Image (tube, rainbow, N blue to C red; front, side):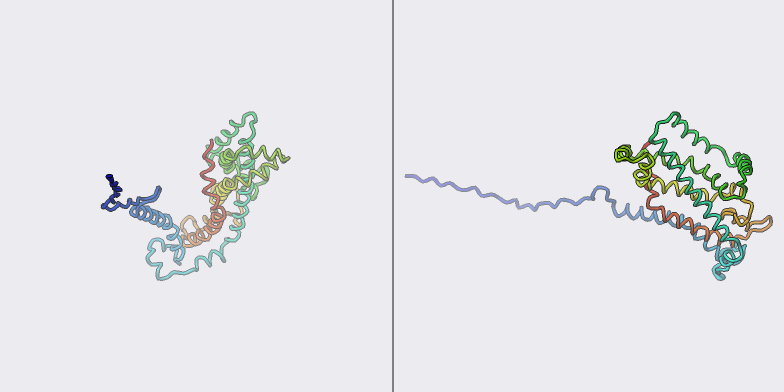
Length: 302
């Protein structure tokens, strides 16, 4: 009797070492060189942007009005006397009061009008609603010099010359058309179903607008408020024409008092400009969270 021997096959192991997969960069991850280059460019751009501000602060510390001609001499005689003079010897706080009244009034009234206008054009289809928006855009085509005389006549007839309300209304005529377009574009990005849900819950159109839509439109409102604030804050032509009392000057007009026909107190102008920048910086810090979102979201729909 024969016996057959069956041999079990032996599995041979591969003697060659397994290659470790090469770890590549993740999607969206930059190399070290690219990261260093981008950070270097951002640092240089930041320094360029900050240089005028730093230079203005530096000139404001010079005691003489001609120090801007030889700024190197400021290092040995820096002083805060310019700030003391501006705060104590000029009508700085009157200018501050006037500026806050005009800018905050323009911002409040302008945002309310532009928000309601933008919402109406975005949601309601009344006859001529498209032409209405184009009419608002056409009003921005006229230069200030053309509008100055008719506005002065209108304000004088209603006795609003040298009056805060008159200047606020003039500024609103400039800010409302742009802000209405801005808010209309932002309201277009908010689903219409939210309005329908509010009406189903029994809200009136004003209730829907105030309780549901406006909270969602905070970024757009922030941009409109910021634009209105800056427009009223830095405007010179209308303020110097319609405000006659030196106690009612805004900051932009008050700076002109340091310049005469034969002289310019540039050191005092620099100190005043630094002080003026504080309210704008504070307002920007207040709205910055919603500013970028509002600038980008309004352009997604026409």
